[in-house]
Image 1 (cartoon, helix red, strand yellow):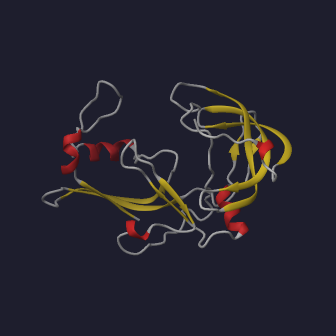
Image 2 (image 1 turned 135 degrees about the vertical axis):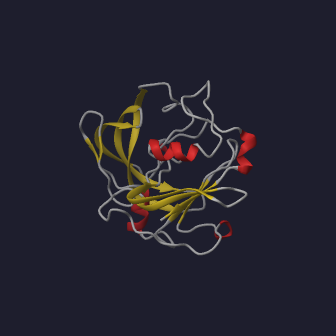
Image 3 (image 1 turned 90 degrees about the vertical axis):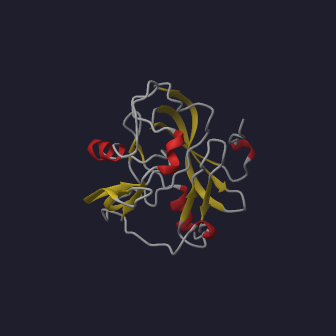
Length: 231
């Protein structure tokens, strides 16, 4: 099991005294607002981080949320975002990333995430930079869309699907004014039904007896069409 937070072992802990009731995904939880110095491997420290220290939680389904597979949630919002509490109480706290920016502890006001390719692999998150060896070319900046959003989302201009061998364009769909939401909680690519169906028609997807959505045989993966996003 992972090490859990123990406020009595911290010399920088401060009890805010506020009791909260919050909801995250399908987990309901009672918590207290606590304040402490957040320390990451490598020595990065974020002083005065206020967070919900959960004392009790319950799940509303059996999808795995609230299991022992994780014991905390690390916020990455660049601004304060409103997320309603369980019993109507607001849950508006600056994220650790926002505090990193305000505390001027980063080499650059950015973070990068590398997702694992296999179940047993570990991903990485880097604050203040990125692994240049993993990038082919230069970083291309994109403005958040719309300008007043508190989410990590940009404007998606379109999607193209190209045949792996012949390079024939199979799908070329403009998507004006469509928002592409970057999520660290769900490592999936999701589209509206009609666009997803047009893409799946070219991917040899077939119905599954185990899940309610089409699946692609693992042997077909190397020859799948190339999916390109235009931002």
